[in-house]
Length: 439
Image (cartoon, rainbow, N blue to C red):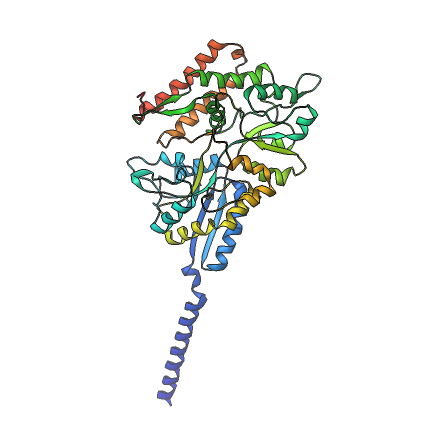
């Protein structure tokens, strides 16, 4: 009896062990096998779209858990600047090549180079100017969105002011903005004729100035034939651009520091015009669908030009599941998700070689100005140098101080001295980094 009892007990133990093994293999122990990825976004408006993509991906890959955290672009930049050098931070994040360049000292970057599968796809999907070798001849990141700028204009306000259409030149911009601005009995501005980027954190102020600077014939940083760099605005282009801003704020008073600015102002019809990226189209759809507006290329001065950069999704070197992360980045690039992002969020996709978005543009014509450019349009992107972020930030800080100077109205000497002072700061940074040169 005892032997039989022992045998039964042993048999029971074996059965239980086998059942446990089966249960563990079939789901109980699945949590231990889950692949977890984190994503940081610098644009909160992209989060709802990305969550939809993640849900579809998870339906195909239930063992993968992807969490998203979104910040403003400046907040993300600050977080990445601390986290990446420390070997921390997200598995996946969006950023520009220019921002990433500051980590590329001695060709040591905190992100993974693209594997062959991703590289093969990217060569076919993106224009060559958006996908090119960077540090050490390697390719990094999968382009996601383009950051082209265009002018938003309120059609109703233009009709009321008997204006023929959007401004085509700087002269039009100055004249139209005076016709469109409104004031109260005390002379306070209640509606700006044009909303300029006069303040803000980080490099954004300088970036918004740059598009006008390009139209004047200059640039924030100019590359020499010898591969060196120097400021590209201590010249007539820089002086004319600063004069334009000073005149619009202080001489003609069609914008000032007290009134609302940017997309919020446009949605609330507190401004008639302003310059921004395509995401504002999505913002208007959500916050101000009743506003009748259009978008056009920025007004021409010496040439027609704009800043045209882009952002990619990168995978950090600390990612524990790079194969899954790369697979997800390719999943994000499916045409239906790119079209969804474009139409409902407003950021123009970088994938344009093998995919067309004409159906989206027909439904939302305001997008056309962000993806189609005249043949004579000069598209400029920031140089990929380690100190680019510092140059932009210092440039912006000095501009914000200059914008408040009413004494620069009809003061060409003051304008010249102010631009020269800002340019010295840019060249000083370039010299310190060993990048400065005139030839």
